[in-house]
Image 1 (cartoon, one colour):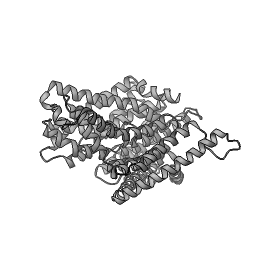
Image 2 (tube, one colour):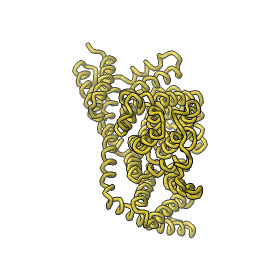
Image 3 (cartoon, helix red, strand yellow):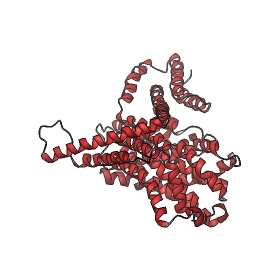
Image 4 (cartoon, helix red, strand yellow):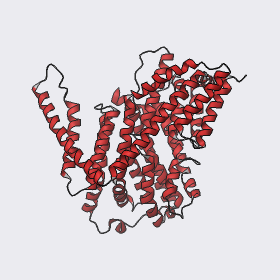
Length: 526
């Protein structure tokens, strides 16, 4: 007779093998779970009553307002990719930093951080920087391993620097796991954990990681000058004066920085939820796309952008609800002003959409948004079936017993989970790990009195390495597809090794100093 423990292990390993074979994640999770549930039912180890909960669980995800942020952030990222923001940033940052030792690599790190905070789409960032920066770096004498490594690593910063798709999905999973853990501990009214908490908690670690990348790039340039030579200043400036250079840099920075401040600032300031802020980001990206596609008539877009900023300030300062019995004169003035802002925003948004559609980009943006969003939500539905069958077979008790029996107590359990997730990152991507592993291990770890924000950021930083670790690191594939023929796959693989080590060092720093992830959420949200 096959025991439930054997079935649980076989199901988990079977899903990993099928995923590595290239089958769609959503169908793999749901199909494999049904297959093993059938085997377990035949041998008397599974009660089909668990399937009765499936519809309500899927409906619960359909009504989950947090997940609405997923297509909005995806739309924002894809729209910015089509707006040529990266090209402007890379060109101008190269002018600003290129004359320093390792300057082109440093400029790639800075642009990667800015794109991470405004797009969060790893594939688009790596491909764009690979097309624009890699040929220039190679032509200037950069070591191919260093050039490819810094581009891949900087492209993955969108996974840890908010707003990030993984933080949205992970925040929802951590929140559910924390609620479950607290109920098992007898606390039926725990403090909620939100995506905003994870955004605040990830900000400082993300910036620290960027700083570590820059320090490494600068140190390599000092130790081995031939690997990252500086570019002569006169070649970079091309005869431009200091004021002209400053003007170009300011022009390239203003739009993405305003968008970052609008999205992150509204979340961290408590003005908007992550879903509402994602809508602000989608509108801002559309306006930016309309501006970049026709800069001869910028005023409709400028008026709309100012209206958007004005609406955010009014929302924070004035109660704009009209369905109230008592509204003061000042509040009526704020409501009327908000109405005018809405008209200005609508006009600029329509003009931008017409320009984007005229260039043929709107259809492509919508199609990409639909494909990525459908993939994520398909995985969510398949993961619900996997979770039900896993729990029906007693898998959560098996994992709980395994983690609690590890030597070292809580530290040993966290270390064991981090090692397992790091190894899985060699073969699976972050979405697969998030929906397969997190629902299993997170409730158990959170019952050990761990801070949920700290645990979430630790997991996010760990999952970031899955984009860089061969053989299935997606950032490696993205760069391989656009790299010149003289750059070998082996050079790309060797180039990312120092950056994976840097990420693991950063993970160790966060483990040693949890305040790096918990200080800002406590400061903002108390």
